[in-house]
Amino acid sequence: MTIGFSTTPREGEIPLVIPVIAGNGENTFAALADHDPLIKDTIARAMTVAGFQGEADRLLTLLVPVQNGLRLVTLAGIGPAETITPQSLRSFGGAIAHHLRAHKHDRADVILAPLAGIKRNLVDMALDLAMGASLSGYSFDRHKTQANAASPLDLCFCLPDARLAHEAFPRLESLMRAVWLARDLTNEPANMLSPMGFAARCREMTRNGLVVDVLDQAALKELAMEALLGVAQGSKEPPAVVVLEWKGSADAPVVLLGKGVTFDSGGLLPKGPEEMWDMKNDMAGAAAVVAVMGSLAERGVPVHAVGIIGLVENMPSGHALRPGDVVRSLSGKTIEVLHTDAEGRLVLADLITYAQQRYAPRALIDIATLTGAMTAVLGQEYAGLFSNNDSLAAQLSQAADSSGEKVWRLPLCDAFDKMLESSVADVQNITKQRMAGSATAAQFLSRFVNNVPWAHLDICGTAWRKDKDPYGVPGATGYGVLLLNDFVEQTIN
Ligand code: BES
Ligand code: MN
Ligand code: ZN
Image (cartoon, rainbow, N blue to C red):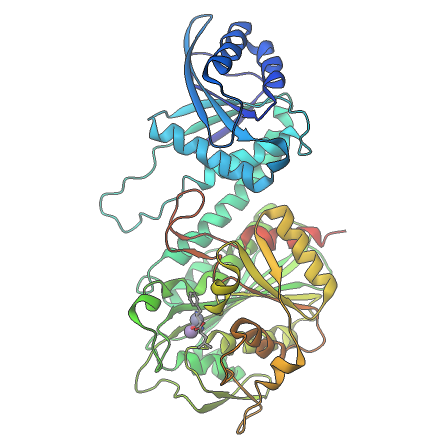
């Protein structure tokens, strides 16, 4: 997709799209009058005849005579001003792109009129629309021998401050590429993306000052990351931990940890077929971390950030962990593995310890498709946020607001902690009561955190769409890239 910004529509019979806010027709007309008085009169009349008032999701397409021919004009209702948010604008941008593609248009000019009663300025609105249009064009067709890739679309957003939008656009483009990378990695089938294959993809990201360090199986054994190694031991695929460091400032780093289970069969306690279908996505947290690290380096963001991902495949075999096995984590704490399908927390426990041993993080954030229970609680809209630190939780909530990737904070507490007491080891990896599944998983992780501001994001519901996302795209969403990026950027004072 090509996206541009201009103060006036391009010459020729290029279709126009005009977003109309409910009850804001007058402003739209005023802006149009600057472009072409003929258009203004026809449109004002057409809106009255059709009874179009800018209702959300309503489209009205007209052919309008202009100075040297005809223009196809689509009036696109956005709904009332109060309902407009960055996310609604993104979905709207996606809907416009879908509409154009469905009608076989390969280009259009989108006219943005100054809108009364809207807090968001026109430049930000143009960028939101551009982002939605671009994200809606995603499809994962790498393995289709006859790809029917979305036809390329050439959009030009017309607004008075086109230059400002143009200058701000490279940041957005970098972030969109990052979202696409996270989606591509997550959608990749597990036979095409093993732990070492994923590590190799990370190595290829060594540029723009991003330092990539791969700890292979031998290095992990040397370190004695035995909780992580325990998960990996049932698979023929060797595990890896990848450390990506971007030193854009001399401050203590923000450390991002990602769960990278390239396939989660459940191990010796396997999932049923329907639960297992999508388990290639169990590395979505790692994908988000890697993608955001690449974008921070690409843009030269002045922060010190470190991404650490734990890559393993969870498989049943004669070598696999048995229920009841005890593993010794990197921290020295022993873990009774009651359930082989509660593997993500074993991987993260060792990453949490490793991050604290190797760095003095000013914040430690892990992101993981950790518990199916998350979907029951918050569905596909909100990720679960757990934290030992109120101000870190507040910062993440603020980043959720600005990025549109929502979080909802859930509690940790001593009572949950007690449920994890094991009779044979220091801690057990599930509670036998099977209550508060997401919170007790978070509580388990907190056992490995030593006095560092820490937050855990459970993205089980938000990372993957079984059906379709708001842009009509199934599968990986890339959730977390925009959230973590905004969080990291907002730590710059
Ligand atoms: N990767 C799964 C969680 C998951 C479920 C992610 C559905 C995406 C979609 C995780 O490793 C897991 O299996 N969790 C178990 C924990 C249980 C055994 C305590 C679960 O949620 O059932
Ligand atoms: Mn599992
Ligand atoms: Zn898992």
